[in-house]
Image (cartoon, rainbow, N blue to C red; front, side, top):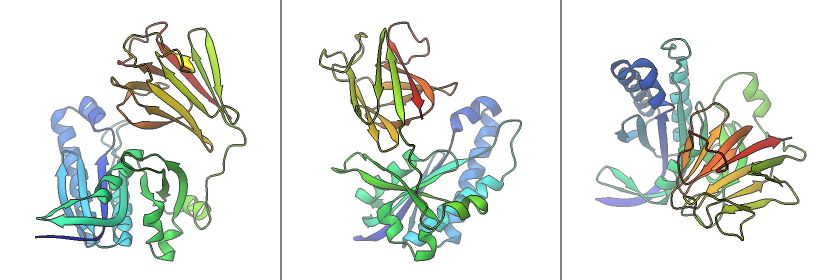
Length: 298
C-alpha cells in the first residue's frame, strides 16, 4: 500500500570508512562501522523514527516531522562523538543530511524528490557535520531554527534552481551560542582563486566569477590532455565560495593539500586552501603539463 505525505528523511554514513579499513584491518574496522550503525539506529528509535534501510556504513531513516529528523541527526552525531578513539589518530565520525517534504511511502520504502534531496545534503556534509535545506529549517519550531545557519545556495542534481543549504549546529557550548539566532557566515571581503595551468594563470574573483576548462579552444583554460572532454569543467564564484563543477565524461580529480584524491563524476565541490586538479583520469602521478593548481586567497 502506498501513500504520499510529508516526511523527513535523514541519511547518515561513517566518514572515512575506507581509511578505517586501511588503518585497523578488516575485522576491527567492520566492528567499528557496525557500532556506528547501531548507535545511529538507536538515535532513530529514540526520536520516534524508523530505519528504512542500511547499506554498508549508511543509514536511511524516516521521521514524521522535521524536528524529529533534526534531533535524531544531532543525537547520532553526539553518540558517535562520544565513542572513544580506536587508536592514535583514529576517531570515528559521521556525516548527515536531512530534508523535509512530500514523499511516497510504499511497502516499507520511501520514494521521491525528498529522498534524493536528503541524500544530496548528506553528500555535501563533511565529517561531524549535519546539512539540511532552508525549507526544512522553515518547518522546524522556532527554538530549533535558532540552531541552524544558512551557509550557501548550491546546485543540486535534478533541481532547476540552486537550493539554499543550512548547517545544523549540534554541539553544545560556546560555538552554538555564537552561531545561533541570526548567525550567518561572514563573507570574506574579496576572496580570489588563483589558477595555474602550464604557463598560464587566471584569477577568479568578483570581476571574473566564472571560468570554463576543457580541450575546446573556446574554454578559458584550454586543457591539453586528450583524456579531458571538450568542455570538461567550470569554476564559479558563489558569494564567498568557489565551486568546481564536473561536466565531463571521464570525471575530474581533486586533491586538497595532502588529503586523498577526490573523484567528481557530474558532481560539485567547494574549493578550499590549495590543491591540484586533474582532468579525465586519476592524477596521483601529477604528470607535468596536465595538472592545474589552485590557491584560495583572502
